[in-house]
Length: 447
Image (cartoon, rainbow, N blue to C red):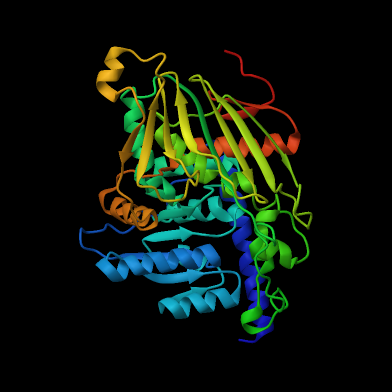
């Protein structure tokens, strides 16, 4: 088949698939729930090796493919059987590295009956669509953070997981670290009393500015051989526009494909906090401030971003972040009876061998002192490889059909907070969450 014939066939395939996707999307929105699962998926025996396919093998996707492959080599639990990427060079390199099939079109992976799990590591605006299609075809999903690009997409994922009974693990691997789960136990046992405020941060600094990853100058929709990029496919549901290398290689700088700091980095803060809290919680109101203070390049997203949220249970969340200063603040939760510090160095993705409990000496009573003491207590925890633990948890849940560490509902609560922060920043106003209708509003919902 000639190159021109391949191009025509690809366009025809894209048109028909896009029409089918639009119909499916309309049905989901009209009915308020996903369509019936197309397949139930392969039933895994206790010793069956899981066939994994990775969609999106850029920097993060290539790393995840290597992690799954490394774990599979160590215990024979899984193997990489296919990869997909719209960039021919990335697809080819990943396929050669893992000695597996490679595709430009992810739907060829979705349609394979031998694929058990799909790893979604594309730009954010593709996460929901690929995850939904994978589950509808009987596959379990490991979806990189943020879980989705919008709140509506997150609602669809929650519904689809419930209907199809698929396993979905969201790839904020720090949630598998022990500090959050240990803190949760102490908080549940009364170590800090009523919660008042959680705080955290995510700071970085560099001369280049965050997300200014290298650009392959020869690559693009007109590129030959391994330089070819299927730009039309990459755009997907995003607004149509001519090829722009900065948008492709540095997508996190643009609202069409990402929420910048909030969705890329604050997900790693808000998700573990929802694990620390007695239960995952939606905010009641959210506001965000910041701006492009240093890196005045083509970016649309701010390089400095601060989030403030209130929760109906009676506590607040304060998060700070800048891509132009690397000094973190401690990650902690304050209560009336004490404070628990999960990461004193402030790095929510960093390792730690302890958490710290600091009682409020002026208000604690004798019962508290008998249980927790009256002075600062350093509580040791085991340091672990949270990335490997997170992947193994996903693979184990594929066999047991249990909820993974960062399940779709916990991730949904985190997604609402960070997506509301993005909207608040862009609209310049405080936003409210109506938990009954699961919608963002401009005014407090009526009681």
